[in-house]
Image 1 (cartoon, rainbow, N blue to C red):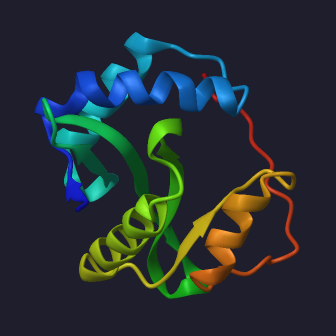
Image 2: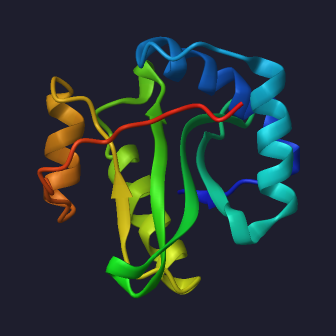
Image 3: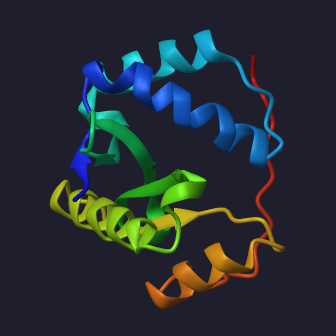
Length: 149
């Protein structure tokens, strides 16, 4: 069952985030990510992380989702972005991604967000199917990014 992550979960999350970044071909910076997670957990108005744990034999995170808040006039104010969703390979096919996504949507809605956006690679068919089944639609826009640092 998904739950909202806290500061105490950072080390376990970092162990999952490294393979997520590798799979997405995103350069991995553990300390930068640790610092960003610390900031996120210290300021709930920025967003939240949801995680699912394997409780046997020792509790450990096996899946997570990161949601950050945004303000967009198109959606009438507060909206959010699902920036990461990852399920460890040995735990895939059990509905954990769907549960994480549903929990993330409910949490964001309770916080006042009126919409959730995400980016997905065109060739990630399993993720695209999951998102489509949850009502996400292709807006026929291209996401462009630029580092400001």
